[in-house]
Figure 1 (tube, helix red, strand yellow):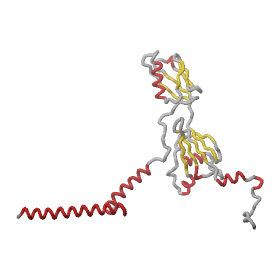
Figure 2 (cartoon, rainbow, N blue to C red):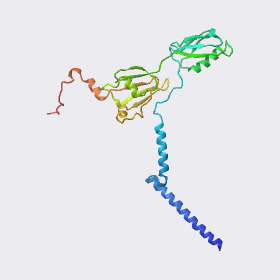
Figure 3 (cartoon, rainbow, N blue to C red):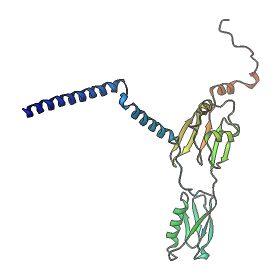
Length: 255
């Protein structure tokens, strides 16, 4: 008798649990169509907020940096041999990328970093010296720069000193001309010897919104190009001698 009563209570309990589960599933299905469930609003909003913060903390595109300087043509390096001073020397990277070394001849170094060159020199001089100790110092090298051209007041090549953004680069070039298209400034960045990345910058929108969150930090070798606006192109095609001759709008045809 007791077991029968127990079975009845268990059956009722299972019925209630199944009903609650079915109701919850129906509620979730409805919420998938209508929006987030009230019971999960805080968690979802918190998760979305965390995702938004993560997204906002991400750096703008084209922010990759080369970790080390790579030797270029015209660079001057000094090689110091603390234990074999007779091999101390200075060398200039020639136009073909080679340097001429005492006792070992020519070595191609263009594109190498100083740690890579140091390791290579140890291998080369290891043929005539026992466990050579070599220090490589950069004496003269291509200073970091960026180029601004197109519709800027002073097109040219500028030294890149410290942290400089695209808008600051335009300012260093004297700002835009009256014919510039501020909303489509192009940033060219070399990703490799064969690929160049291009990013369109809406500097007009940045200033109008007073928000420089999308202002990209310049890297050595970057090029900023300010194109000419449609009005500027029209102005270019109008002969200078005719500018200012018409003081009223053109009349409609047949007037």
